[in-house]
Structure formats: C-alpha cells, structure tokens
Image 1: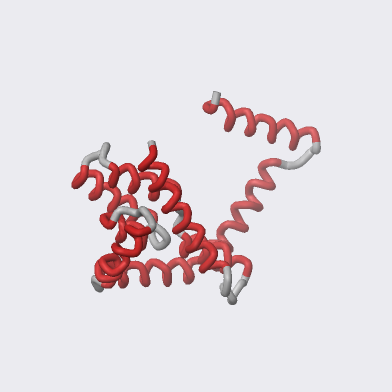
Image 2: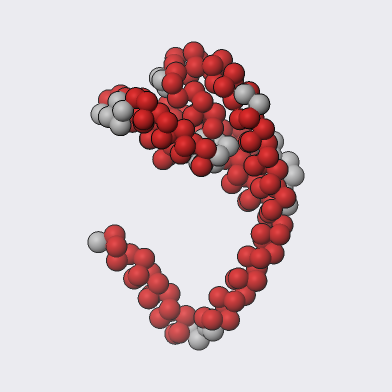
Length: 168
C-alpha cells in the first residue's frame, strides 16, 4: 500500500492544479529559482557548521567529551559505548552513520548496544544543520530557546529509544 501513496499524491496534485488552472511548469520553474537563492543564503551557515563539526572531531575533543559524558549517560540508560554517538548525532548525520557502522561491526548487529545505536541514529535529527538552514532563511539571530529545547528533546528521545530497546 505504501508504494502507491507518493504516486497517488502526485496525480491528485496534478489533477487539482489542472482544475484550478495553475500553470504547473511555470510554478516548478519559480520554485527552482527560489531554491537557488535559498542555497546562496544558507551556504555560509552550513559551511560554518561543517567546519565546526570537523574541528570538533579532528581535535579529539569529541572523544574527550564523550568519555566525560559516558557515566552520566549510563545513569540515564544510554550505554557508555554510545556517548560519542550521542554527541555526534545533533552535529552530523553522515558522521553518525559512519559511527553506527563502527558500532555494529564491533558489537554485532543483534547486540543491545547496536540496537540502541541504530534506534538513536534513525530517530534523531541533525539539530545544528537543520537550525542553520531554517533559521538562516528566516533571518533569526537569537536562538536563545530553540537550540537548548531541541537538544533536550533529542536527549530525551535517545533515553526513551534505549529504554524501548532494553524492553523489546
């Protein structure tokens, strides 16, 4: 059933736009033009986030911080082996996937640690990347509450994900 959802939505949108006499191709081109201006606007923010992430990992600071966080995270039910993943998920989706592969290779796909890692990686979002894209477009400069709330929500989701993996 799910393989039909996207084609059905596509056909319904085309029929609806024909009924409303909307010029589909012109709207498509306008959207493409707007996306180019979005890329130009957002690129400096994304570049800054990527440079900061790479500096964080290359300096070894991510390993040091993850060792410090392993004990408090274990009290929350997150295995100590996932502390670096917990740090990396809000920063980089690709880095999190690479670390997930390492964890699965090291602990085995059916282990509790690997199941938690897969659940945390799949259910989390790259908060700083998304914030850079959305807030740069909206011209928001003061992220006073948005980032801390997003990080807390992500941590809470990770705790719940590991608890569910322990039960299941």
